[in-house]
Image (cartoon, rainbow, N blue to C red; front, side, top):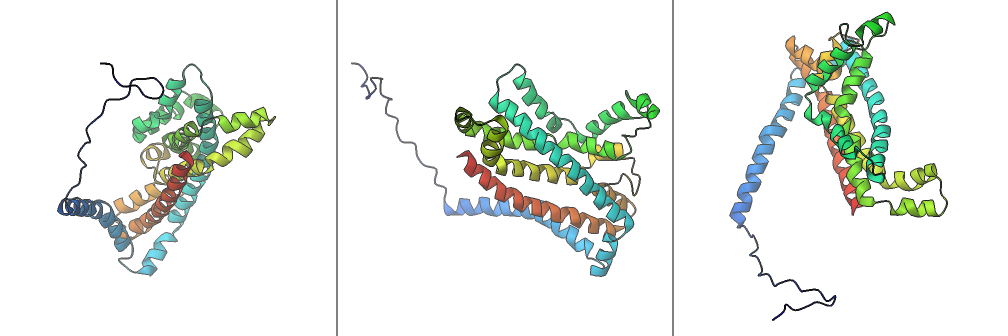
Length: 291
C-alpha cells in the first residue's frame, strides 16, 4: 500500500509521536537561577564593587586628585585619540568588507572571511611583537623608517596600528549576518528604478544597517579602550607620550599607588558599563532588523 500523498502530489511525512515537553520542577528552576546569580555576583559584581570601593578608600578628594594628575589626563587623552582614529576607520572598512562579502561572489571569499577572524585567534602580545618585527629599529622596515625619520614603534602610530589590528573584526562581523539576512531585493529594486550606486548606498543600504553599524562601533570602541597586550609591547611605556589608560593603571598599581590606580580604573569601568547598556539597546534593534 503506497504512502498517502499531500496536495502537491508528494508523499506526506510520516506521523511522528509527540515528544514529551521538558518541564522542570520549580525547585530545579530556582536551584539553577540561584547558582547563576551566585556565579555572576562572584565573578562580575564583586570585582566591580571592589574597584569602586578601593578608588574611594581615602575619600572623594583623593579620588578627584588622582584623576587630575598630568599623567592620568595625558593617558586619557591618548586613549581617546586612538579610539577617535581607529573606530571611524573600522566603520568605513567594515562596511566595505561586509558589502563585498554579502553582495558579490568571487574567488577567495572564504579566505577573506577567515582573515577577518584572524585577530580573534592571534594573541594581542603576538600582534604587538609582529609590529615590532616590521617597524622596529631592527625590523623589516626599520632602516628605511630611521632614514626617513619616521617613528612607528614607541610612538602614537604604533599604538594606533596595534589597536586597529585587535579591533578589526568587530564592525565587519556585526554587519555580515545583518546584510546577509536583509538580502539584495531593495537595492536591486532601487537600481531598476534608475538610482545610482551612491544613492542606493546612502538611501537604501545605510538606513537598513545603521543600528548594526552602531552596534559594531560600540564593540570596537569598548575593545579599543581596554586594549592592553598589543599596546604594551609597542608603547615603550613612555609617560606622557605612549602610555594609554590601561597601561597607566598597571604602572600605578606596580608602584603601589593603590588609590590612584583604582581611580583610573573606575574610568574604564564606567565606560564599560555605559558600553554594555548601549550594546544591549542596539542588539535589540539589530535583532528586529534581521526579522
